[in-house]
Amino acid sequence: MRIGIDASNIKSDGGIVHLFELLNNLDIKSFKIEKIIIWGDFTTLNKIQDNKKFHKIYTDILSKSSIKRIFWQFFFLPHYLVKQKCDIFFVLGGVFFRKKIKTVSIFQNILPFIKEDIKRYSFIDKCKLFIQKKIYINTFKESDGIIFLSKFSKKILKKNLNLKNKVTKIIPHGVSSIFKFKKKNITNKKIRLIYVSKLDIYKNQLDIILALFSLKKSFNIKLSLIGAHDEKNKKFLDIKIKELNLENDIKIYGKVDYGKLPSIYHNHDIKIYASKSETFGLTMLEAMKSGLPVLAIKHEISKEILKNAGFYCRNSSKEIKNKLIQILSDKKTLNKKILIGKKIAEQYNWKSTSKSTFKFLEKING
Image 1 (cartoon, rainbow, N blue to C red):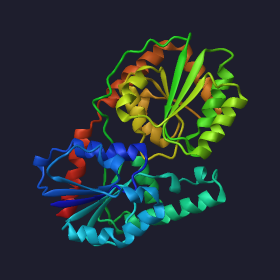
Image 2: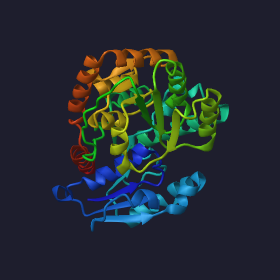
Image 3: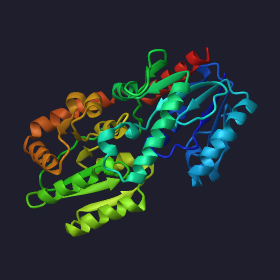
Image 4: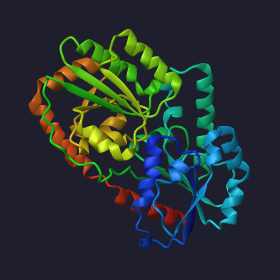
């Protein structure tokens, strides 16, 4: 079996982690794999370990322009798949245009399907999301197999596409072994919050900032925002932080190296998860495996991942504030949920995810 993988449009931290963990944890001897050909940019492909059965084809120029990438995906990629004698095409970014061989796609970007969050964007951004949604639906419609990361993501796509005759499978992310449990001694003298996610409207960083502003009168509380961002979203939050005089309390660190995340988690006390438009929620599991409790917006996806280990609140700065006060006033429940979270996170591992994924590819290939 020769597998082609298009990683040229994998940009999110979760998508990149998914790709290199799938390949780096692959027990290739367990499958009849002749070659895996991966197209992507230098940053993405260099995270994948060298293997004589991995053929990495660098397309770095494509990462600089979405127009060039779409042109390449439409006109050149189908030809390259045939030229490389690929038996099956594995689509990680939800986009392909011309079907030449059997294809398996992963549903990773759910935002274009969530009307509640789309309403918050500008007209131009709404148009972009609408186009994305149409492209994704076409991709999944033409795919021979579809992989979902959660029950929630399958439910959302099912509302937009008839899956009755589709071969599908739910394969959740794993949690890397680099994340180690460290017992926390959370006191009210200094509370360090962490939110690992890109800066964007639907991630609701502003609500957390406003909650922290309200708590500053009663608690010594700090917030770290970690994740990729564009200048527009960062500038907006920088202005709000300055207006509220929180420059010494909130730090925006941008994207950090994945290998540094375990020590970063260990230097914080509570993980915040304030988004509802997610197909999974890997950072919740990584935080729990590291020993952090998680406060999340109450939603289907957070409840599916966290179960009874999570603390939940509604999506508003007032609700976040009140829930944080409740968490800090009941240390017994806090410590109990930390241990429950550890057990839940330990059920997820990348070796199992990789094995299930390539078994599915093998099944579709026939």
